[in-house]
Amino acid sequence: MTTSTKLSAGPVIDETARLLVEHYVFPEIAEQLAGLLQRRLAEGAYDVDGAEELARLVTADLQSVNGDRHLRVKHHADPVSPKQGAATLDAMRRDFDTSLGGARRVQLLDGGVAVVEMAPMLFPLDWAAEPLGAALTVASRAQALIVDLRANRGGDPDTVAFVCSYLLDERTHLNTMHWRRDERVEQSWSLPHVPGARFGGSKPLYVLTSDSTFSAAEELAYNLQQLGRAVVVGERTRGGAHPCKGWTVHPHLEATIPVGRAVNPVSGTNWEGTGVQPDVACAAADSLDHAHSLALARLAG
Image (cartoon, rainbow, N blue to C red; front, side, top):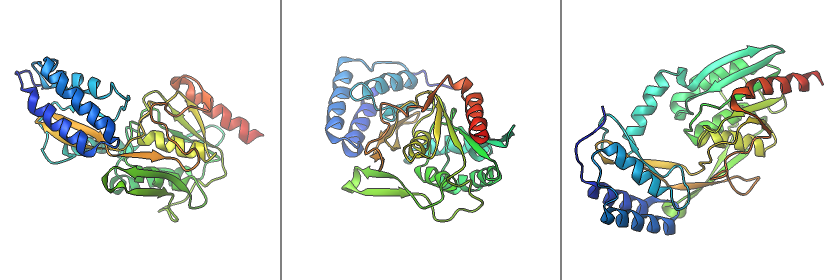
């Protein structure tokens, strides 16, 4: 059920502003946003009855300066733990348990073309390694592979590297994260060993995207595209490249704040705001058939 009683927005705004200034990956924008939230609070813009409406209004203001889609206040119908990230973790666990661990479909199409659908997200690697590794090992025997990310809303960068490891032959630099805290820089590489058989780095590979594909799912598509390993088929993705953390700011509200930024070693940039541009643009609903046709034509050639 949603909250409907009158709430005091002041503590929510104060805590969200504090978290922005302390953690947001772009400190100057954090200061701007904190000031904006406080001005809007003083103007009475957040005088609303329920937490859900407050979340909508604050999120719109948070995204009004630089369009960062990871920067938001999320409403949760059920009360959430004050522990950092607890709300997101609980929701992920429910999704994991009802989606075969994120390996939602493994299918063999005509002509020896396999499909592995990864949805609704790329779950934490200590959860997802077994189901995703099993799915990719089964698909490793296919002549061509289609990775379906159309309904994937993001997840764990370590899981991105894990999946890439099945689709490459050699250890490869995939991404570099620049973290706000301590100005730390962390490289992401494919793994030297995977628990199963690799599809490898030479057979035809296609990645399906939609305008709902987001965050870590975008990184997976972008990494493989920039390496020249995969053909991306479908729609431009949502455009969220900044990894974030969540903090409970009200029993029903979670502030998610990006704490780092990605830099691809090939492009020198990322997909923030622009999304991943498909190599072959088509409606998401048609992308599976389109990719299958492309795979068959390449195999025939």
